Amino acid sequence: PGRMGDTVQQAGSSLDNLEKSLKQLGLTFGDVVKATVFMAGDPAKGGDIDFAGMNQEWSKRFGTAAQPNKPARSTVQVGLATPGALVEIEMIAVKKN
Image (tube, rainbow, N blue to C red; front, side, top):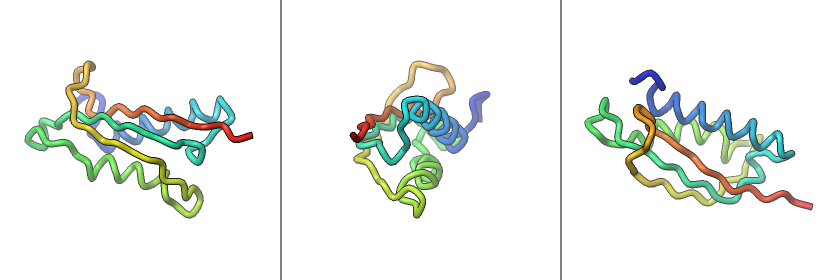
């Protein structure tokens, strides 16, 4: 893995940062309605994306007993602009009244 870590580490870090951002807005992962996961091929995996590694971190936060919401999700393989980046995640959350 590069200086940023492997897919599992990057997915975990991204999700932790997103959780902090949501919390600042008074939201949680339970408020997320749509997510897009952008993944780059991992040179350590022959250029294939590590979907299982990303999903390992995802499933700790979505579809659990504590947080059963499973938002709509798209996952696409892309070339990411930051060297060494394997995962970028964007989310749309809805604040309920």
